Length: 263
Image 1 (cartoon, rainbow, N blue to C red):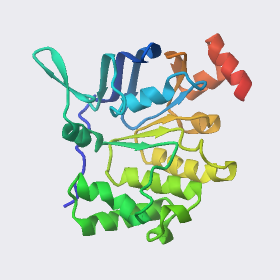
Image 2 (cartoon, rainbow, N blue to C red):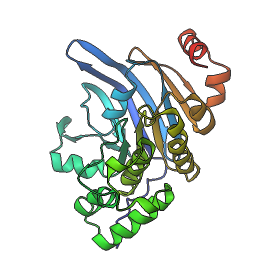
Image 3 (cartoon, rainbow, N blue to C red):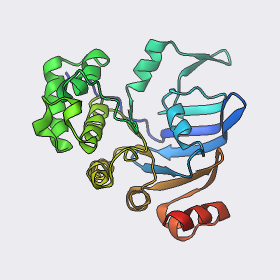
Image 4 (cartoon, one colour):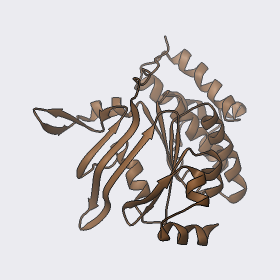
């Protein structure tokens, strides 16, 4: 039987951050982030390089530990459990189970080079979710068709273009049937002519109601697809709102300056 993540409870938020801080040594990267993202919505995080966007995203699945504040995904603390008023970091196995509901697509494709495309996709569903191998293969083939790569199941990553590899990476993340998908600048490593094929897949996911948090420099995608735009600079959220408000009625001078340079 297919293992499907439980549906979110009524009124439950996909992501809640309150006062989140993160530093690397003496460098403060996140300086008190407050953010709420609803299920079924697409949130695009924009901002200049070094503003903390990717760090915030990596904190959402505990690839980075927060130093202070509260961070929840699906109503549960990320990477920690509370006991008698104190927070304790989960064991690696517990964190892995929690991450199973959070798909992530990186700038680099991070595919296993010694595995075929199909093997890359079924590895986690079989190993982590304990899905029957035959069923996992059937679902993987369905996902490859979804991302336009049905004929590449037996190919190896080195034989694929960057755009194809990134689409495989998306299929691999979807194979875990996550409730939340995180994208960390998924097109930044691609040649310009390959960007469109990845964004097309992401648009289709958005149309299907997938909850997505996307760190991106693709402003056209953010304007067209997002429900919520968050602009970060120097470790803080400077401005956020719907796309129309952000792109057409920006209030903050720093956001205006950013848009003036990139649009």
